[in-house]
Image: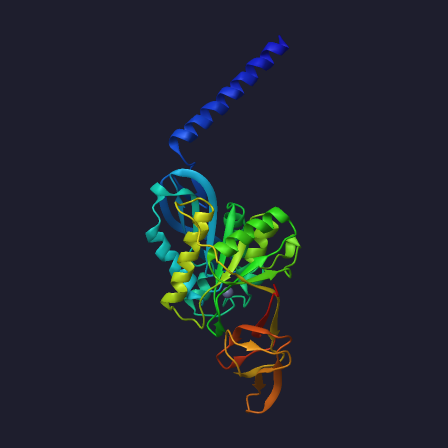
Amino acid sequence: MVHSDLRRVLFFLFAVLVINLFSLAVEGNERFIIGDISVESGEMRSGYLPVPAKNGIETRIPVTVVNGSKPGKVLALVAGVHGYEYPPILSLYRLKDKIDPATLSGTLILVHIANLQSFQKRIIYYNPNDWKNLNRVFPGDPDGTISQRVAYVLKQEVVDRCDYLIDMHCGDGNEALIPYTYWMISGNKKLDELSKKMAVAFGIKYIIIDQSRTKDLSESKYLGNTAVLFKKPAITTESGYLGKTDEESIVRNTKGILSVMRLLKMIEGEPDMVAEPVWIDKYEVIYSDEDGLFYPLTEMGYYVKKGEMVGYLTDYLGNVVREFRAPFTGIVLYIIDTPPANKGEPLFEVGSILDK
Ligand SMILES: [Zn+2]
């Protein structure tokens, strides 16, 4: 008796499985739900992810979900973690108009402006309510300050829900920056290979091999790193500079995304892989140790020699108080190109090109 009951139950479960697989094949993709936005297969929907209030401060995150009519990968594209970095933000609105859910395989999550309050107030680096840098507080805290709560929502609703992630940045309002991509190394070979393919497919020739990110899940700091630590292949891209909205930087972002989507077989065609990437195996950000005015002596994309003066700092009375030199020979990936310099904030980043 017991045996035949078991057989009946197994047969029932098998039948349910077959029916489910069959309906998936017929109907296509599954419904995708993020926050209270529910998107059927073959649909596109936009809405907000709420970030709950604490001490009277709340915000929301504008997102679009494009749910393809065919099953496939879930790719998250995040713009505006820094609210003064415009080309990634503008490229995602363009993409929204370009993608047809009827021909898409898988699902796109577009986070239009992750740090809406910083965007609204035109603030570089920080959120104006807690003066924290959103890209240093991941994986976030539901009981923390507003930046920590935004990070928590992004971790729960975006990182956990995607298979792949691109965190899109550029030179902030004060940063002259050449385009480059961070390929973050986790030590997990399979994961790292997938992230590497995404980096090369995105199309920017300068790629940093980044071994420096923390492996501590509770202190993952950066969005891209958080995704990687949760075993989602991810890259962080930089395209755009000085708060501009130049066409070249926007198009570089849009093209890069479409190429990664081809790599992941979400749309037809072959990805546009960088033919000869320039690998950067070491980089250093030089920070200011005082407040004052920064005077750059070189430009983004220029090469500097070890020990060469890259810029200097004056106090508010105009006295030169500090010289900043290149820590090693390499390329200036970005350099501050507006006068304010603050203790603890970056002045420039140098990358060392890997010898082949
Ligand atoms: Zn940024």
